[in-house]
Picture 1 (cartoon, rainbow, N blue to C red):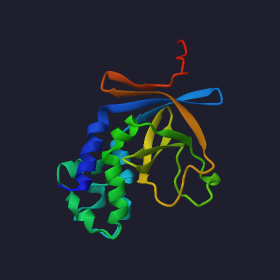
Picture 2 (tube, one colour):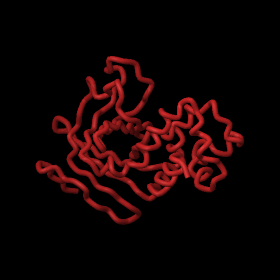
Picture 3 (cartoon, helix red, strand yellow):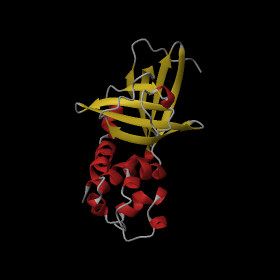
Amino acid sequence: MGLFLDAAIKWDQLSDTSYDITIGHRHVSKTLHIVFRPIDFDHLSGIHYAKDIDFGLHRREYRGKKLVQALISQKLEDTRIEKSVNWSKISERLSSIIVIEEILASDFSVYQFNPRKLPFHSAITAAYFLYSEQKQEGIFLFVDQEEALCYCKSIFKEHGNNYRRNQTRWTVLKKSKRVKDTKTTLFIHPSFQEKSP
């Protein structure tokens, strides 16, 4: 069993999990409702960097929302990806996915993302990103919004580029985790007061 399959199993386990992260900045607050959809694993995993690998299947059999189940059912041989010239880039994404719950349980920062304000070019499109120094390594988790939901767009370890440059940092006010019908509060900022319904 390889890292690719480990990450797919972790992502599949998160299918019934969501996080509500209430953030505030200059007297404005909003809640990011983060979910883990099967379709998002495809890009998050970095499989698009493995164009040099023949998986022995037609693309429509394993890409998009089919990728997680193709790996878990072993229809797709997970260790083939390790032969890609881009394996180091892919593997850091996969290892970050495996610790995603630890990242969301950690003391992370939230930034509103505007790539035009970066001092370098970035092709990433996302509404926000979380930055965590999980296990003494900086990890960026980018999320985008679709109506009331936030979904994961990209995840990777910090290298040379500092995506926090010139970005608006929001304060994490409250953090909750929901698994099926059970909701657990993970953090409440000392100054946070819940608004009355």
